[in-house]
Image (cartoon, rainbow, N blue to C red; front, side, top):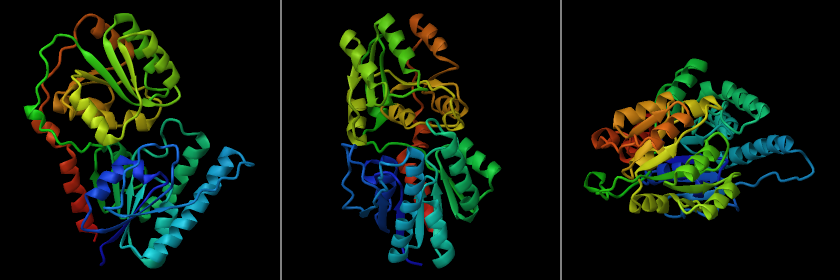
Length: 364
């Protein structure tokens, strides 16, 4: 069997760092990436040294509703993707999220290849998704999932949900959203200070307790940095102008973000989510790994996967709600813990590369 592999996504892969890390790990394969162009994304990684990137067109008619446009885009995307599969003749199609599943399974049935379904979230039950889109996603999965050869997920509970809801596929792998990092954390030193310095990385959206966090830090005066983008961006910028201890930073590409986190003497990273979806409740967000691999502790939600990670790596505290965090913060009970680097190494991207390559070897 040939080593031609296609990674396909309805995102701009040049700014999707989970997919980029996977492609970089597969340099001895003939990799083609198929995605879209997102002109609003300022940080795009040059893929030329690692694969050929093919951009699909979008259905952009403005005279129809958003839901109808989304439906036609789904069909249009899959038709284009199928024709490219037929032209490229891959041995394996690596599908990122649900959008390209139809075309990948259709190609497999007609011409033969392996299909990997890589779920970046619990696709049919995630925040910010309409009921109609959730139902459509579940419908696509119910038709296509059983024809896939492998499932990749980002947490063990999401994997269990897919097995319990559909079935167990021949191969399963957990590929965590760990960052690539250069520094040996065991040799990293921190300033000897009793003061704490907090950071939040990610989307400025509902369900992340950001307004509550702003109120807490405005009241107690401790230093907190917010790095990201989203609907609450103006509110965070406004707070940063009015309070010297609150700092706003524009989103950064993953390599610069890791540099920034490593170079600043943060003590705690914030990840207190609201259980607005099963995907949130079962998640292991990127920011957890970005925080701990930069050497500082996590303030996390008391969700099963997050709590298990923090306990295993001795990397921080979990809270059932934002009020619990506020009480411990204001009473001086937050003391930095010594991260268990041996346990942390099991979550590292170097270990994820081993898993990914083992999966490809088994399939091809």
